[in-house]
Length: 266
Image (cartoon, rainbow, N blue to C red; front, side, top):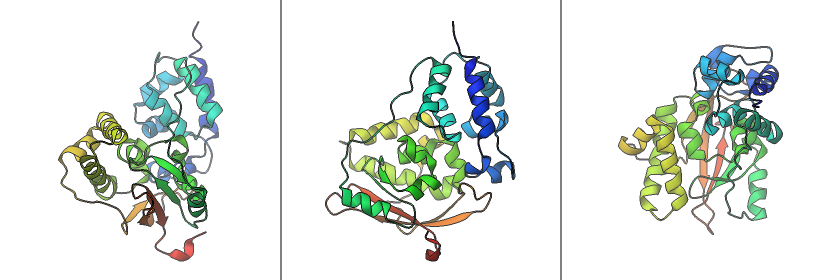
């Protein structure tokens, strides 16, 4: 006998306790909120489905919801490992897939450099898989905890379009250009080919940008862009990207995301 109906009990509990202000861009989309809790309608918008479809999930009426959609719910509700496991067991009747973790080894001294920065910082590999990040990075972009490819998140995930202001022009087009150019220059990179194929499959807009857009950007070093941050309501924040590559492995990208007012570094 199926226990799918139980998934609604858990989701209602988690929704009721979730602070909407922790969702970047929530206030700009839905207005200010001074109490915890997300509605079914808000969950539907935040995870990219209709309200009726989300209601069916909580009612136990979807026999095999897509893994990608459940992962969106995990990120919006900021579920820990045990709660993620619970969601998949009751919604799909199976364990969640393992989170992707790149095999690259990062020298401890490089980790220390990342952790020691007063602003969000991370290092990724040639395929834009995250290798190391600091606590400030998690505060601003909680999704990094889940082993998600940077390009995949930015170009295809609904919450990216909520958090990243002027998403298509300021973020998606230059990032798609970077990805396209590296993919063309590294046809032997199988992981990168997987990322590109996955992005094209996930999202029609991203697929169009990768295939047809004529933007030419090779890196974001020095670029200024705008975004919303958790717990900061509808306030818009400008950031500057500073990008570096270790001389011992230039395929890696070390990124510092800084405020234009350097005195704001914590």
